[in-house]
Length: 133
Image (tube, rainbow, N blue to C red; front, side):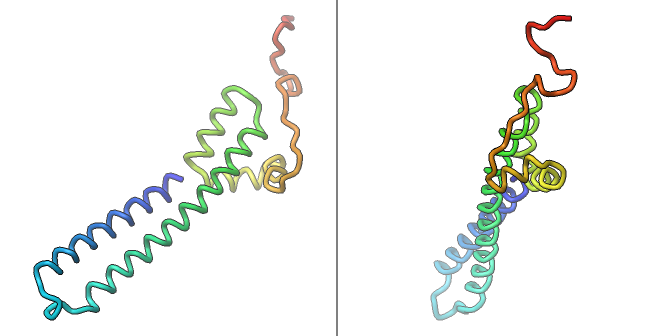
């Protein structure tokens, strides 16, 4: 998420700078003196880069949705869930790839299968409130 957002931001900044430069050149020169191919091609290339950046950003937003669902359904409550949520939002693609390879619960979430959430009492050596031995 962090990478695609920075790529999208830089693409939009470059597009805006080039657009303002072309607008200033259009005001300074008349249409007869300005070559039509020079300004249009560079702006078209930058707008193409911006479209690709938007596409990757939207795809990563979809991945963030699934990553958050995996973090909520496949972890127990508490610190573990908080760490997984932070990792899912900041490092979306590596988090998804690692979970899909090593976590069966994550594959079940992607396949939209019913997933059983592990309870604290099911974990080995888990702390059970009220059971002081």
